[in-house]
Figure 1: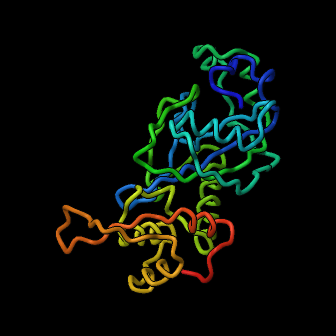
Figure 2 (figure 1 turned 180 degrees about the vertical axis):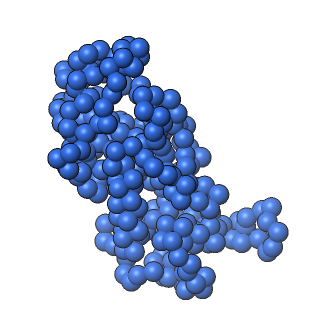
Length: 255
């Protein structure tokens, strides 16, 4: 796998495949909100999804994992490829040569970045508390934002985010979600809120709990959540053997 330390940023054509990029939608869950990780460009002042290029010796999955490890600091990342974006008019919005030169970016890099790029979209699920957001060479900030407060993103990144969210919603109907987004121990109301936030709708408490327990993907612990105003709810954890089997075989029914 190509690593950050091995990349000559002023000679991209010697390291990366031409015309092919990766854009990643990184989802996290915090304070009952679905979050997405965004970068703010040094050159345009716009926000964008984390992205990068595919090394000549990398698979797409290796490139996506490297890109996200550099942005998040997380080693084991749940990744799903969901679509390729290939509009003929799709290209970077036009880097200004003077700004690139001030940043120490070579003319070769400037011309290479202004090619048309086909982008492969991946979405990732990470536990919010484990992420240490890191900006890249072209960005001044890397921050979490609520999905509901994203606003206008660079290029077609709003479309990429929307399609990643729709893919996640569809998969949520047939596969378990939560292990990569929640802490190791959680309550049933916290798990239900995660589902409701992703689906954008309220779910009946009794039906949700009955269905989740019928899948046997969670185990109730003897512990209860402390520091709550009402009766302390039990804590749960995922049964990883059953959970991983459900990822492969799917779940029956819909929400």
